[in-house]
Image 1 (cartoon, rainbow, N blue to C red):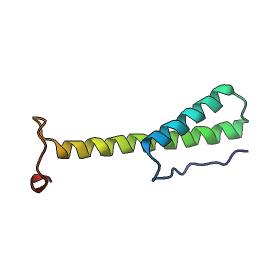
Image 2 (cartoon, one colour; image 1 turned 180 degrees about the vertical axis):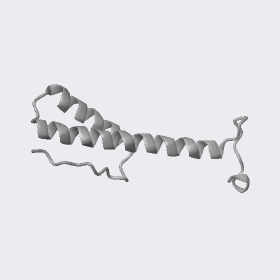
Image 3 (tube, rainbow, N blue to C red; image 1 turned 90 degrees about the horizontal axis):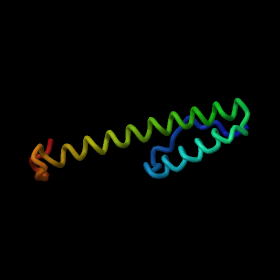
Length: 80
């Protein structure tokens, strides 16, 4: 059985996580994995998807803090 990995390396980049998600989708689409392996891959995929969503949400929040409503950069001293 493949290593079950519900833990996501928090140092992983968004691009690395997406690549791993693509690998998981390919493996699952092949349908060659056992039920247990498929479930482990599915769990890993869910964890990676959540990681990517959180990472994007955090970047969006940071961008909002750096740019005001008019699209102007907010000086460092005026940031929250």
